[in-house]
Image (cartoon, rainbow, N blue to C red; front, side, top):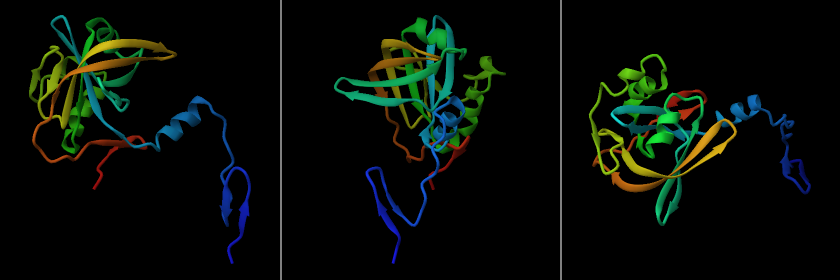
Length: 180
């Protein structure tokens, strides 16, 4: 017979729950490392200059009107250009785009981020990665400052959905992963 104990918070079946830890930055980051996330390039055009960063913080917000959000650290080199430009594109990466993600994640070669791969623009002029699983071309509807980040809410103007096998690049526990 299993040892079962009922209480108002949980059911224990022969297992002890972990001891809670402090809700501090270190434990928050450790917990978030356990949340798998799709990898996207957030790109913009500020005048003639192209800017971009890799992010796991893109999320659907509303279907009517089609809207999404991305959270960008204020210390990121692309933060201020995103704020000034008022447009951005969320480019969803595929498994084979790990090298592209690494190029955009590195601060060492900012000028070389757009040198490889095919790049086009749609309605807003923000750079669109042609090989993306999906690309959401957005106008910034709101930019909300919160602590270390800005939440960019983008109203989607056009979407690129190439015909291809859908195998997304996923980030989990500090590294890129495959779903298969």
